[in-house]
Length: 126
Image (cartoon, rainbow, N blue to C red; front, side, top):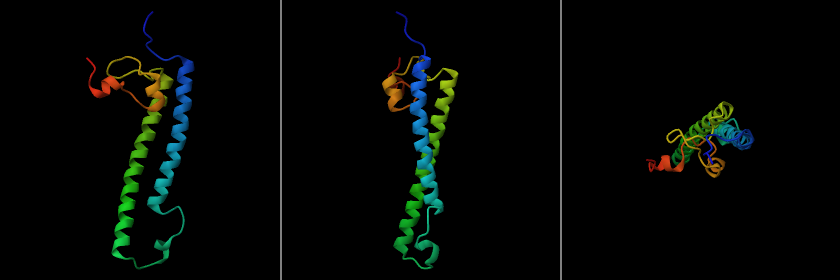
């Protein structure tokens, strides 16, 4: 029996539905983070109160920085998911970019934007 070189159209559709669901959730999370950073999510004391304690300002800046970093990571995740959709359309989805072999379906279900097999990622590929 020859080794599979790509996933079937049915399997690709399964992965596509997983990716689309994750993409929708990721975009929602990104918007929440963005709204947190820009304070578009509602009114709070920062809109009206001219004075803050230094500690409160420091905490607000820290949480804004953390939210910014999380938003950047979320945006990168969204880009990886969108790239995975392109690979599905090209029928190259699930092929390890180092070994050229199929990435196990279990890995793709857990990390649908993966482009490396576990072996290649760990550097154990020969």
